[in-house]
Length: 285
Image 1 (cartoon, rainbow, N blue to C red):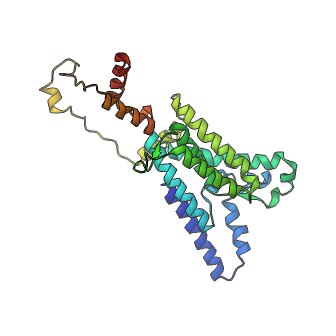
Image 2: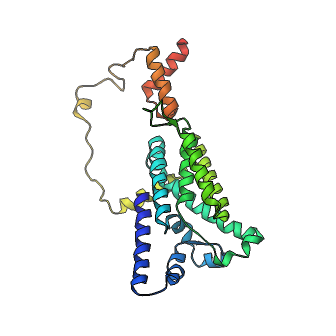
Image 3: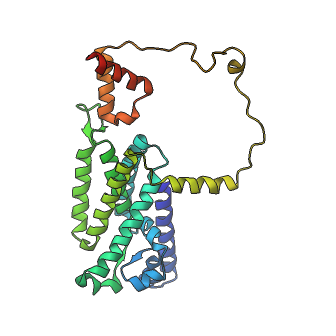
């Protein structure tokens, strides 16, 4: 969905630009009348009239190569982040990265005098900052996550993130004022995942608001759900399981569990695997 939104905004802006071209209007008019209303202005007085740019700037791009590059990184890190944390946390993290990086950009132009002199003509846009938040979040959650495991055991995720950071640094050489927003986005990704590990989901309120909105258009079920027949008839164990399956404890099985922890993190273990790991520690296997 994030990729679809980015592509939709990209195509829409280029369609409007094409209309300007067919109308023989100068391209500068497009950037002044259309593009700047989606981008985050560096000037505070201009931003007050366009508060929605805190969010829209995170989906606004015009360069085709930058667009393709950003979507590649979003697909790569987004897939990993969803695999590690589920698919209901990537959108909140993306929005946090977009909003906070845009706010830091505005603040930097208000704080530093050399930047303040250019605020009237500067704008901030692009999906790179929220993607950085997702990349850092995925790396902090599972730095040992393996890419291409069939090639020599795989490449650790943290190695790819270093490559990603180097590419971003080269990009920032032409846009030095974007350094602080990108650092802020990285910090957002770090804090988001650290809070998640402690049991606090920063995106829970967004998901609740989304569910509430969707439920407005969903008719409520009036039927009383029935229990499965086997629970009503066959199993009358007063809350106890009829039997408990216990897996054999072997060194090979323990090694497989440890490899899974190294690859995807302890949180991805099943209850059975966690129980086996506990038994192994008690038996000093």
